[in-house]
Length: 185
Image 1 (cartoon, rainbow, N blue to C red):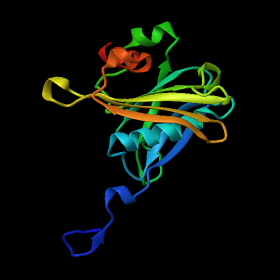
Image 2: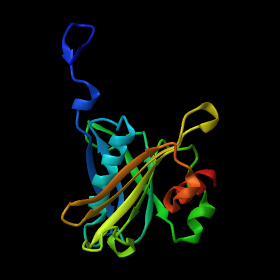
Image 3: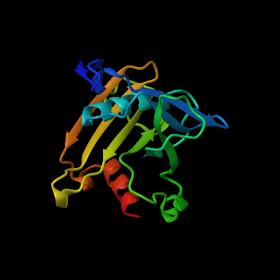
């Protein structure tokens, strides 16, 4: 704990949990509210991705591979501890998605979630696995490297795979390549 200006102890940001609450429309995942605080590190963003992939495993919740943009503004109607949201901006297989240019300003993070029907599990003994990628865009020209995380999880919540990386070459992975292309569009 650290002290604030009144001499009282205040919790470190890492001790405040990050909450995720999915919301849907017509039975389809439209976004995820983020509450408590923002993830601070690449590892925390990857852990947030793992929780999002677990949500994507729920039967019928995510019909196709979908990109979510992180928005730092709070929705008008939400719990007071909501800090922002991950909003579905479109399906990767929809041709109109790239043409629409979904980002007016670069988001602090983009996620791509793949439902079990569009995921090939990294372990052959696993089934009903969803997967995803989170891209934290950097500014390499200023020395800020791109960061990313990848995860797979089963419908029962079992994490099949989780990894993260700093200094990502965006063209070396299909998910980061697509997310980078969307940012550049």
